[in-house]
Image (cartoon, rainbow, N blue to C red):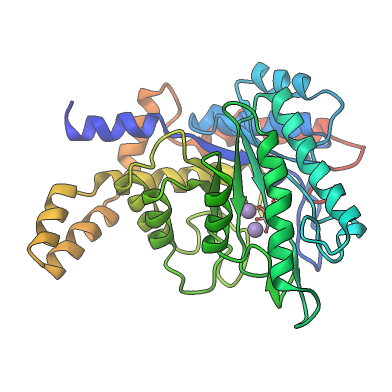
Length: 386
Ligand code: LRH
Ligand code: MN
Ligand code: MN
């Protein structure tokens, strides 16, 4: 196989998981702008996700968020997905939208609230059993707002205890992905604020526990690719929640704010042998003012473009320059790949996959946008928090 053929073959195997919540209405603390044709049910979110996969060919799974996607029969929901050519992916827990969680969930000072939170996580594993999902994605809004509010160390003990109970419940082939976040909604301490804390808990739990890197959850200037390299080296990188930030956890389309950062991350993934199904490439975004399905298609394409550039890095030349201490030469090798226009290559890849080379245009021509506006009238619009 020529090198280019190998790059194309790798790109054809790519899988980017899209989040059910990106298809529904969402907004900021200030306003949710309702859009026409937005899904009213988890089933309709899957119908939209199937369109993203149909036109991109690389978005075969959909992440659920419980209880936003609560249904009576999860096996039937999985069947609904399969009938449309997609599968259910990670099950995301939600221990942040209940009055009981004002002081936290799994780290709450009251054992009764902790019990409720852990029971929810166990229920998520039951759902995984029914859907065939392999990943339980955990993010905790837990933390404190004021010095002295609660005991920082005791909260870590409660976290460890709750996680251990859920870990024990995991079946064969199931794993837990622990997401960290620097801040928000708690502002003084966050109980899982960084990759180090997540890593320490995962290490203690065992090999079924891995860390998730949400690209929006870091302080400005954080070298995320360093974190990726380190976690991969330790076999503890479970996956990504991709999005873009200009300021904070902005949840904008991945690759929109800093495509160079996305390339640097994908290069470390490729370099570290992480371009495999064991690392989950998930989007975690919201589309508050733009049309949702084309934005998700665009996001998937942005991940593809960064991946293509990362795969094109001449690693032999890079290694040679690095070994020779050729600072500028090494940097030039990396920049050559980044500055390559990979859009023609990706158009070819899509054609070889039997797809339209321009997924956004193909979607627009398909009439799906008009159809859902006409058909999805009435009822509650499902969305962030619905
Ligand atoms: C928290 C987060 C987490 C949630 C999602 C909706 O900021 O990134 O992954 O599950 O947003
Ligand atoms: Mn996330
Ligand atoms: Mn987030």
